[in-house]
Structures are given as C-alpha cells and as structure tokens.
Length: 266
Image (cartoon, rainbow, N blue to C red; front, side):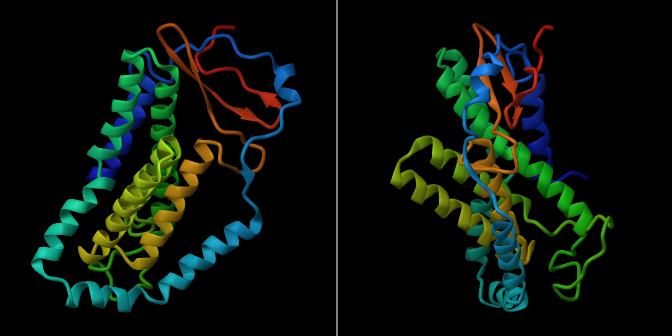
C-alpha cells in the first residue's frame, strides 16, 4: 500500500503533467538556440567534494542513530507524540500537493506567468526529490526503527523503506523552494523551522533513524536548488517554464544544446 507521501507525489505528478493547462501542454515558440549558445550555464555547480561532504554527514549522523532513537522514545510524552503527528503533516501527501497546486492555480487565474512559474518550480522540486527518494528507498532497503533490531538492518529491494525519510525530503524541498521564491527572512525562518520539526517528528514517532532524516533533508534541499537554478549538476540546466496565452510548457536544456519543448509542434 502506498504511503501518504507516495500518494501525494503521484497526485502532484499527475497535476503537473496531465491536467489541462499543465506543464505537459503545448509550449510557445522557443528562444532561438543561437542566443542560448553564448549564455553561461546558470547556478553554482555541484562538485564531487560536495557529494562527499553530504555523504559523510549522513554516515556521521548514523553514529548517533541509536542514542537519538533512545532519547526520542524514552523521553517523549504523549503530548510530544501528538505534536509530532501534527507537525509531520508539513511533509505528508496532502500539503506538498496543495501548496504548488494553489500557487499554479492562482497564477493561471490571475494571468501571472511569474506566479505560475513559481508554483511549477515548487512542484518540480517535490517531484524530483520524490523520484530520487523512492529510488533510494528501494535500492537501500533499510528497516525502520520498529522493524529491525538496530540501525544496521539493510536488505535491498526488500520493501523496507526507511532511508531516506520521504516526509523530511518533502518538507525541506518545500521550505527551500518557497524560501527562494518569497525572499523574506521571516518566511525562511518559519519554513525551515517546520522542515526541521518534520524531521524531528519522524524520530519521535519511531518512523525513521536520524541518518534517514539527514539524508531526506539533503535530497529535498538539493532537489529544490537544482530545479530553481541555484545549483547545477553536470551540464543539466534547470527547467524553463514557458507560459502561453492559455497553456504552460516545460523545456529542458543540456549544456548549450536545447531540447525541443515538451508538447511543441514540429
């Protein structure tokens, strides 16, 4: 059975690719490739040592998996668990779908291309993060705290799906993408507080290890930064959201070479 986060990811993917006026709709004419061939690639590149640092952080967190779990289980009250249940909804299936859908809808209704693009970037961050997280869950096959005797319970392709935390990934993808769109310190502080709280709630509820939460935070943040163009992986540029009179299109580029817009007519 799909979890709420997985159902939400599928619903968001359907919204962005199948609904009328969605990102899979016909795009307007593209900017000539010659103009882009001299344009520098956007975003700061992700280097090998960035990946090594992030991976090392996850391994370092794994050393504290058992102590943090004991702290969360032995020193939390029913009130703490009730609060955790409420806070984790920031990364559950409903909220990550409603927020970008509402922004996209508002942009289309207000005929605001910039607002529509903002919503598409938020939704795209969640989709990219969900694809990565779900793939890693299957490949790693880590037991959740209540499923295994210790944090070393790994069985690839077994259906165990503890690493990374999907709720935390979604929460950090939302926090990062919304923060980059809003550009307000108070919003950034509030959004990341909710994201950190979501990760902590998964530990309190015994659903994830600390290292699962750290991995989810890394994936969510990275996905948002890649989609909104702040960071770049290899020569893959962020998606361009092309707004037409009544439809929206999605365009990807790889280095100076432009791919055809999705849904564009030959």
